[in-house]
Picture 1: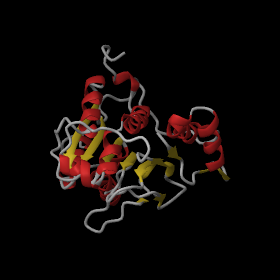
Picture 2: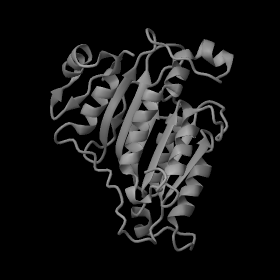
Picture 3: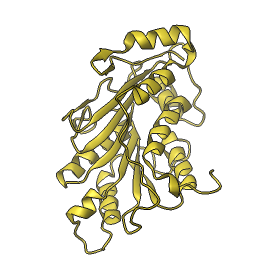
Length: 274
């Protein structure tokens, strides 16, 4: 599958030529994966996601993973990659991690759930310490991707940090801004495609580059190597084909999942998953 890394810059140096060389010489069919690893593992660019150790205070709230579905899709529709990812995470992290999925128009409900989980003394008010103990990851596709940023921005207004946001073919809704990542987000990554009637934003940027690291804007191309997305409605596969293909592409969601796992407490993994 053809792919590119956009205009990523690392330590003041542009990487497009490096990505191109890797695509042509090493493994041309998996160029996005190579560039993704370069973005994550480039010298001096370590991801400070701070996985929680087993010795941390058990009274702290669980790590929270929120996934938003696109379009008018139900939050528990098993056909969709967002729901499948959540199911895998719940199985592998049975304790210490709360994983929830929501419809993209239920951002307020997701916010209330987050506030409830952070309120460890159950007094109905979050202290400064309870807010700073937050370990929140938000991901989504299409309208769900934009809702991820809207939710992060709402949490910023409440003084609550976010570890990571992940957008897959993000489409703005309600005229909102989903390309500027709020300063309370430590890390952000964007996966997109540029064909069809619906196409995701190709460039996200930090509101404050000193506080937020943009891991990368990763482009996927399905023109020459289309995917078959089983179970999706016929009208979507006709009118929104590339937009749906990126949602059902395992290469995209493997990378999303890798970033989420890097932020989650390894001690919480189940013995069966190991």
